[in-house]
Image (cartoon, rainbow over all chains, first blue to last red; front, top):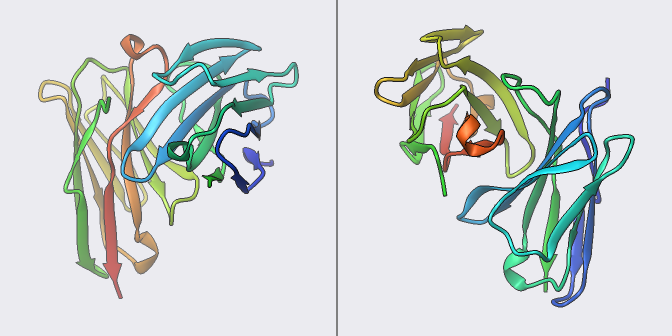
Amino acid sequence: EAGVTQSPTHLIKTRGQQATLRCSPISGHTSVYWYQQALGLGLQFLLWYDEGEERNRGNFPPRFSGRQFPNYSSELNVNALELEDSALYLCASTLGQQGWGYTFGSGTRLTVV
Amino acid sequence: SQQGEEDPQALSIQEGENATMNCSYKTSINNLQWYRQNSGRGLVHLILIRSNEREKHSGRLRVTLDTSKKSSSLLITASRAADTASYFCATDAWAAGNKLTFGGGTRVLVKP
């Protein structure tokens, strides 16, 4: 069974540009979570999608947005990139029920220059 | 904000020794999970302990949960160099809106 896959692995963008990160969950998992791991700041919750709907959102500005497609894959978009958006972005999927562990992808390393 | 705070922030031990790290949290939880991260890559789920459980084992891992003290510990017995990684606790709580809230992590170095 394939795990959670994220693409691209690395992304280098210029300040002000837009970045699109993609995530494919484990087959059968309906919930997708996005986390940002910036140097020195730990793992910060970004977004939670379940059954195609945004269910919860972390304390991030509106230029961080995303969506979940009918096949449960997800996309994270970051507009008007700022230098401090440089981080590892991790996607995780789960069955969408309380009490299950999350399966994380290997992440996308976004560098804004 | 971080729900879980981990202690110590870093730990250096010799191969074969045990490694213990602690996690404290602030609000009531449904369950607490421990994850491992190697070299800034993806997290690997290690173990989940529910709020009505007090201890759980998985191989060389032992997790305890004390809900009265709002704390958990992860013990890695007979450590190996391959256990070198960062370890994170994460809480799952209805009040948090069905998302995991992570602690700052403990960096463990196991010297051969």
